[in-house]
Length: 195
Image (cartoon, rainbow, N blue to C red; front, side, top):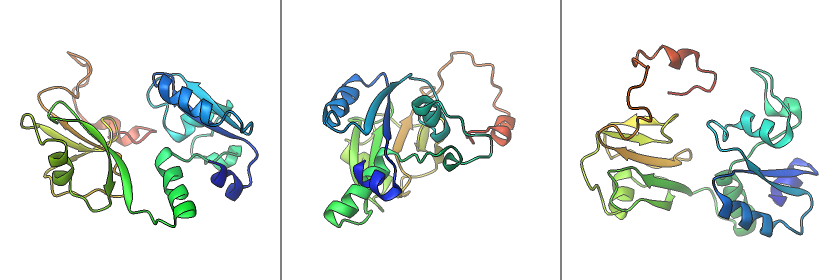
């Protein structure tokens, strides 16, 4: 965080964490207790709180105008993976060759958070997690809202692979009888570009 602040020439940084992660909030608050320029904030748990523009508003109260960029309101947002990659590069001389990835879903025998090399296949990661407990109906690269369906396990981990989700039956549906008829028209007009 301090490396990012120095490179960007900023005097204040916020670490926003959703309030359903009290252990992370406590650990980071303790880690930054002697660095007054960094404030750890517990943000309300809601979707899409982790989105860049939502995080800016939650941490600073500033609003990025539609079509605007965070810099328009004097902000830069870096996710945990980016900060880790910067730290590895600057402090250890390690290029961006690994990605922290969550492997989960009701079809995964032993769900885990893994540090995976770029180029690792989904098959290799899932095998490391004990394989499938049952045949998945849906395999998604990314999160349940913005992730993209995959058609086989030969897909490889890339710089943006934050999760592999394997669902069976209707696990990914949050409402028993949704009003959505799955026409897909929402995709073209969604300001968050949800898929």
